[in-house]
Length: 329
Image (tube, rainbow, N blue to C red):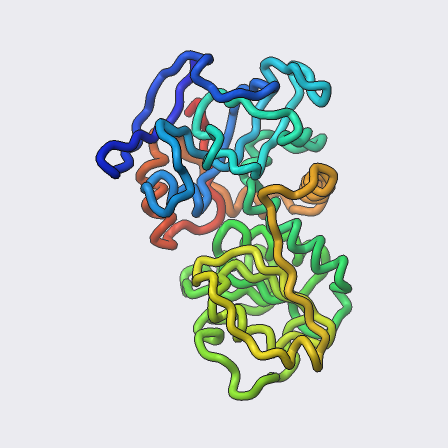
């Protein structure tokens, strides 16, 4: 038996409620996990509220990531008692996810939890932190170094990806410009290590010319849409932008001169089907390079019964930092 937040659909309307189910209701997979913690991400907020077409089959258990302990395994990769974490693979969309006390998945989707990291800390990091680290790794592989000219710009900085990106970059010695539309988040972002706070309104309109003064040694963009194109003219020579989100839309408009005359790179970050070796490397770096005091400062924990209300709040952009779900709380 296990407890889960289950979504049902009737007459085109999605409803959510707590249910107790038999283990045989779980989907196919060769590893059974006792889920201890999950997280609430923006995509979860959409799914719980029945928005978009992320979920096609009901009933459904959402939750795009989770951390816990292996309860049973037919996979050569894991044995009973191993601590594991899962991100991506469309778990919580086409495969039942982490808003439950148990989950059954393919072993190849799981990553061993790095030594010294608790399951609660793993979900305080979650898909957001994992995505932030993938972006940092991509920027560094394209030449980003702390001594480079300019600050690293992080947009959507008060959200989950942005918060962890700011904290990790600052810990690694980078000068970080945190972009936010929330005046109440300024002290929070400074506490995470941001050297400069930038109002997101700065990117609402394109610069006056095809190129602007060099300001950013690199960019981690969580916003997408028109603002993404407006940032690129201010990248330094051979700088890169790692694009990880599209809350402002999927349309991209930019002139070619930043690419032709400054040699900038636009890097897409896909955290969903990333190769397993890179997943493991990202989690090891997070365990080593994310300050635990900063992680605690950006995290609050709720129980499964509070998820529906919290899902509506996150869609309003009113959630700061990371929301961890205690599946047994």
